[in-house]
Image (cartoon, rainbow, N blue to C red; front, side, top):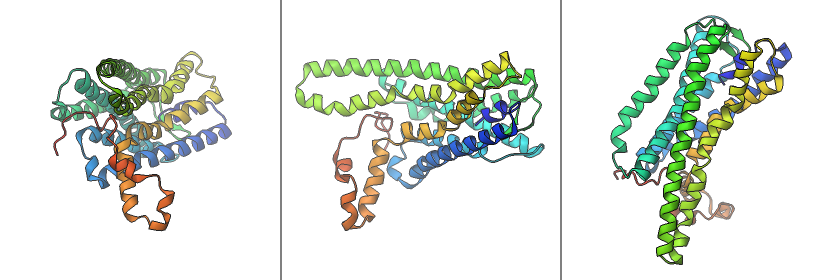
Length: 318
């Protein structure tokens, strides 16, 4: 994604071709994964609740970020600028949408507020406005050029600006998400233990989907860490030794960053509501003689919806 051009500056032509291939392959997977979530939101009306709408915006940002990331090998000129700035804009928007999801969870579960739908306009202003500001500031001190898979910073000042406008907000989002999910999981764990202690075994069985959701939420902050840890290390190394590139680190940098959209689509998008909607459609149109190859779709219709993102008690209007 963003990192490919930055790591390709002093590598050999063969190394740069490998990076281009890794970037294109990983970004394609992210494009398909995030595009699938966008398509599900468009096709399945039952998913158009506020909580999943945030996932839709996240997937849309990931899809466009992946698209501009795999556009190709731009030459100098307008297309070079358009690609570089578009990728930066949508990648920043992607991790900012994860903070709105974390905020919604915290406000609903911890603070017991039901007004999160009223904050949608503020979310848009926060995400798109911040992305625009970070993208505009990134132009200061930059000298765009043709570096492998995209145009990127070549000056020392531009590298500092890039770190400030991308990696600092990124790790701020990671810290915020981690702290928020820790509070949400701790509160729900305490509430579950109290309820189980006061009730019978039937409640304990009913609480299993909630515990699965808790375990799932714990992995959300790890997505951004896994996607951008190698990129951050590579940027720091580039500051220290700008003339020495570590090829294997560059591969990890490019590969994990380009897979962010795929990771997000699996973690945030493929929840019980999406799976249920898909199996219900398959159950309607799948031939009877092939139906035995499907999982037990009635289980998805009858089971109580897991307490995942879509099932948070945000009081979505019906």
